[in-house]
Length: 194
Length: 281
Image (tube, rainbow over all chains, first blue to last red; front, side):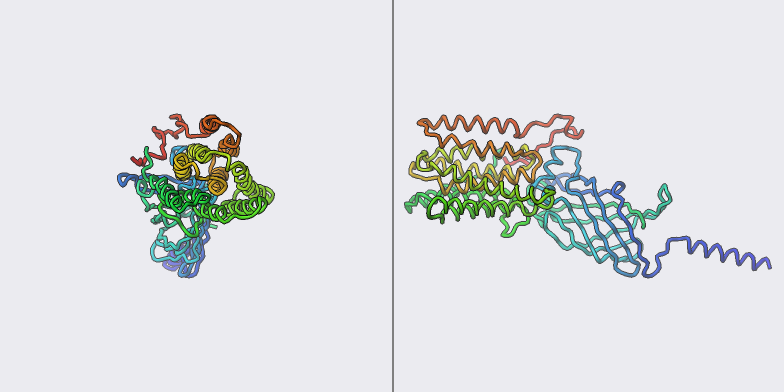
């Protein structure tokens, strides 16, 4: 009798633990809205082939949906005018047609209809990056950095990915040389699970 | 800071003018020289010229070539010339503003007004500066336009775009080469063909500055485009026209040109930002 009670209790606990844990069962879709306030998109260029310089964008929004065993979607919009480097004059210069041309092309956008879970916490998004009116195919590998609960009990998750683009491919050709053509972009996204 | 990369600009203008002089051409060479030298300057600043550029800035050399073509081929009475100039102005407005319209203007009326303003500015200034073309000395009008384009370069720098500043400087250098050649060969005619290219490129640069930069007010553009106006006044001493233009351009640059950044405006990074810190010399 005691054995049966113990067995039932263990089974109940195991079942509770199983169903309480966020499941990643086959075909499960998870929709995440990017929390722009707690996300960072930073870029890195090489200055005079000697040192690295970092800047970031203050406004980012988007959605990411992952489908276990299937193909998800991602859409990320960066406000080009929100570029911030710690110098008002440099930020104005970066917003000008010399670089992001933010008045003419207010948004930098990445969209993908092919977000794949490639094992562990790793994902791969095959999509298109549009900047300054030029669209290029791009594959971004990123990882899920964790899951947790927010202050109000909301489900939260995070993603982190780094990729490299050649800015001249997008028509940003000014000062190539003093500032490297290759730009490394890192997106650390906080997300609210819907 | 010496922009050595722009030295081919006056050379190209000079070669075109010299070649045309040997062929005894007088009316069209300044237009072709200006369009060719500006395209050379554009390629020097931005590495290449795209056939179908995505941005408004990318279309500037095409606009110079279009204006030169229209100026060289223009025939007939004044009305026909004005109509052609309006067509060039309308094309300039459409090419420059078509991608900025949806992002910047919240009403169709504002978008139409912006397009009409650019078109009328091209046709209007082109027609006004061509009125007394034969009466002005060879070097005066291109010389005054050299000052205007130079002022445009400084205002562009103040507005935050070093590349647009360099393009305006390239235009100024091309105009300067034409002025120098016209001082040497007084028979060189700058208007109406050369004026057409100069006005189209100046208005296009001003429109790019006003609509796509942050601190390029319309009044600055208007003052720079009006600066060569004294050339049209019947005066015996050209230096008076140059003096008046220097005052107007100088005031415009003083108001909207580059200025040193106060230390506390640098965002606390401890040093002033210089867009030319990459150095050309």
